[in-house]
Image (tube, rainbow, N blue to C red):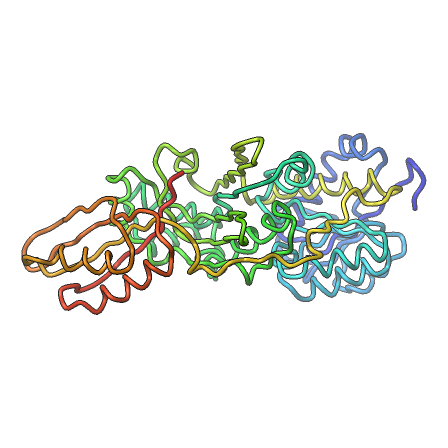
Length: 430
């Protein structure tokens, strides 16, 4: 290992929006970073797809190469920052550098959520460090507080907004009355959503982040495939209006609860009370509530994405790695050593908002109430809207087992008097 005060060389794998931000801040704040790390470090090699592609911030072209081997096998590089994204070739590169005793900092949520155990085992064999603060919440400190500050408590619940794209879309739909398609197009125009927004709007991005948080908070390995997910493309402007009238806001929430018989982990559109702090989180901001058995509720809020906020978290990890290069890693992250028991969605307990379009004639409410009753679903509130040939019935249930509600939903769809079930959204009490 390097002597105290010796320069540490960094290999940057990827120099797009985030990578160029990392280079910019590493250069701009070099003095502060040296003081924090206890020794100087610099980005000495940069792996890119194309040297001449436009970048958010300029980077030194003389450090760039498209030859992966030239960077990965550079004997002078001590630490690698992986910002390629996706599974491959990021996984291959990460295992390669860890296998040679190098340290790794990554912002790759998919890689950590799917292959966290493999990465940590490779790091343990070689005595390397792996850090991934920026994989969840961008610039919001989450991973280290969970690992260190809350290490002496038992985390009971995680609930939060961990995807800024979907939060921006739902904010525009709520505030401006935009349709989902209009709000998505606006988000894409502003650069908040990718040209292919599927990972965001269908909940995959949030599921990966929740899997990482579950693994750390509950001290077991959870993968993204174990997290139930449902996107926002079915949310209508009318649902947001109904929610407001009923005293709720609609957000795409990541929810995880540690229970005696396993973990409930899910991502889906959710109605939350307007007085809850998450209801007022707007635009592309993120906010995560963590409930500890002893500490109670904590809220982490801030920019969940973006070049410089994310780069700040990445460089914080680099500082931590460099500061501890001569010591064994503080945490071997043993939580990935045993798989988490994640319960299927049909065992989840929650409340539901449901809209039925029905024939407007006597006896309809009685038939509907009968179906709910047969399936042990009790109703908290019922509002009828519209009169004439058809009417809309807006209902919120009491807490119910998911399987019971879905059974009632299927039975309602078969009733002749029920013309359509346009909306079903889960409800959190707060």
